Length: 301
Ligand code: ADP
Image: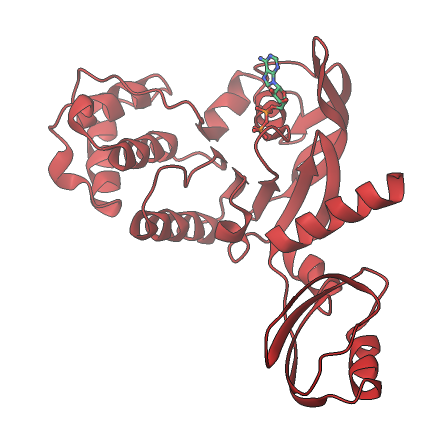
């Protein structure tokens, strides 16, 4: 069942067309990647989902209806600009911010301690937020997002400022939340960080949709677009390449969308090189994104 339905939304900021005709659905209990470079329009879409701003055109439905006070309780939002109180302790922040979501103090304290334990910050409970590192603040903010046990989590750049260990920790927590049946929107420009955790994704650029669908399907449809070759002899000039990185005995070849790995293999054989290895390499989501955006530019020219 769809938890979110977005139909053809537009948003302009004076002369900036931030979101242009975006449609997508988020299914219950999935991890949905909202992906694109900085400035693509991800935060603007999130602000519209949360009803902070209204779309100029189009419609948004959350849990089968319009955004309401009830919806608010069902959503946990991790904003890009973090909102913690510097001069009170981590625990007091968590208890106070949970109370704003209607959680009684006693329960909020228990929950908070449990969450801090889970995220490895239990010993920082009584430390003022001002004394935390950037990464620790981020983890604390994630605890705030989870504190009222929301059904839908909207996480805007959850990996920003985290070291590899903490990125892994946040990834694990996101996966655990999905296991509990939560629906998660993961908005980030770090596509390679999330391609293994996202079930489906919407990739956007300059406010427009670039790709949308199940992540394995997206990857599958671009699977033959990069090949790695080990060879002996004079590497021939090949037709149908977008980019290549040819070394003495190996080459990484990026194929044009209309060219198959078979076409390349045939040209190599005809070019009289000895092929010792020919691997079809899987492109990362980031590489696929760049490929599609480049192809669109090429079509427009
Ligand atoms: P992302 O989250 O993908 O980095 P944003 O949604 O923040 O992208 O921004 C999309 C575009 O809208 C950018 O060109 C940005 O400069 C512009 N923008 C975002 N917020 C505002 C605003 N409040 N006023 C004017 N322009 C804005």
